[in-house]
Length: 83
Image (cartoon, rainbow, N blue to C red; front, side):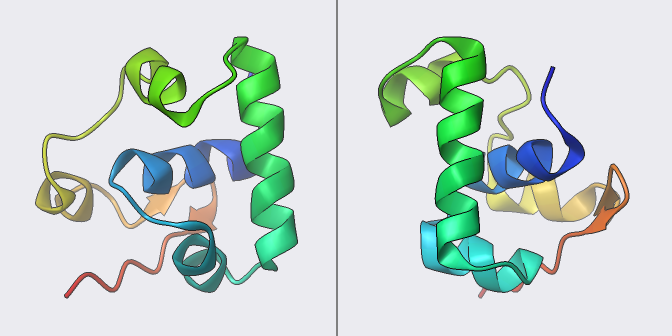
């Protein structure tokens, strides 16, 4: 089971956000994002980002799909600043 922070990180990974952008959006350090990403990969039993993205069932088709969802996931405000 993923923690709320890990789920928020995973949602952003699923739309193609990179470490620095995820860290800024969630107001966490880049290293914290790395730890969350590592924990996610360990918990689901994958070794590569490609495998992780295939595993994730909630992957939105577009960034707009995520943006149209509620702005708050599991109590964490996702500050999505998509340009």
